[in-house]
Image (cartoon, rainbow over all chains, first blue to last red; front, side, top):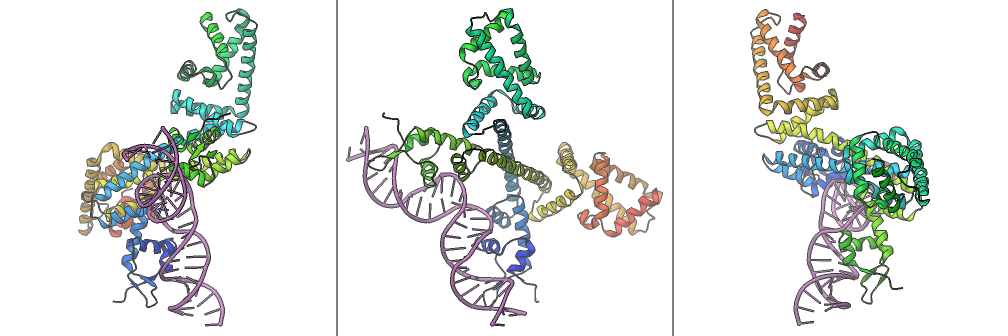
Length: 243
Length: 243
DNA sequence: TTGCTCCTCACGTCACGTGAGGTGGC
DNA sequence: TTGCTCCTCACGTCACGTGAGGTGGC
């Protein structure tokens, strides 16, 4: 009745583990060798091999070694509960990480468009994003990101440039006391509508969310400092005046 | 030039951290208090507050405290590299976890249909799944899972029952030496086609993958012991004989 | 005798949580 | 004087990796 015995190195190699890992499994009471040689070298029997197989299977499902120990010890339904909990936890983690991914994509895009990416720029981008997240759904944000990507960095930068120029012109008109509803400015308002269309991609829901944001938030913050309260009031008058 | 100072507890509460965390940040050189009282109580100035704000922002992106330290120390491009790496790592983790989720769903389903869920059952399910993953794409697996879910556990169990009955009848015919191409059996083959249709949902690609699996793998393993090599040969003869 | 494998400590990891035992400030 | 806050150790976490220093087996 001589049974096959494995030395720890053989077993480790076969299982794709390290010797140290098997030491550890023994230390926490998960798998102990069947016997030892005179020199206290570990010898593992077939029971150990099949137990190790189970351990690795459960480990592959992401169970902790403590949970694995409990599963191998206890009889029955435990297993389903543990695996079920594992799945629920995993789903939550995936959810969180998916949200984090979307934030990272947003931020990386903003960083990338800056020629001198700094922590200040990053913080600004994060704050912008946090604000955006309050007004746009995850789907809408993904839509915006997609459009950004399709347009390319250069086009987006160009759009930002056009905004800056447009706002400067409006500000000049305001300082010069031009009536915001004056026909002289109508060309500006048309250009502005165009830029808004470009940003929203013509999607009315996104347009609405954007409007909500600008109407609810502090305008200086919402526009990242590009629009002063006075300028905003001026623009509002043009809109209500213009119909 | 008296500047505002915060005690550690105030700062911790305001930041949603624990006092211990701030101790730790100091220990690793991330944020040190501006000064100390005679009794060595920590006093934090505004610089600390803004630095802490940055730390928390970067921590929210999933950076390690070591990386955060590097980002706050170094000047420039580092930041983009670090955030980019962070995003890449995250995407890989999401990928892995999404695969794991699909495995867990599969296994939990199998476990759930077993009245006496055991580790043996779980191992069998895992092996079946591993084999399935070799022949079906992730999309196809998701499709199969969806169909399973829509049918419900009872229907799936019933299907398995019907398979068992059908195979028993075929085995009886084989033992009795019935010619597999005999018209007496044609009703059995029709029922079998029906069950296969039910499993595949009529999708030809899934049908093909299933066939590949059965043809390539050891039949006893592939059928989870339900079909012996002899029975399989008998069924094959019927198919080739029948056209 | 020379490698290779094995042995047993024991420290390090990451971001803190959780006491223990003592002092400071309103 | 009584709470509350603060202080400094120091151990624990999870699944091992990585030596250190020594012995066993072909």
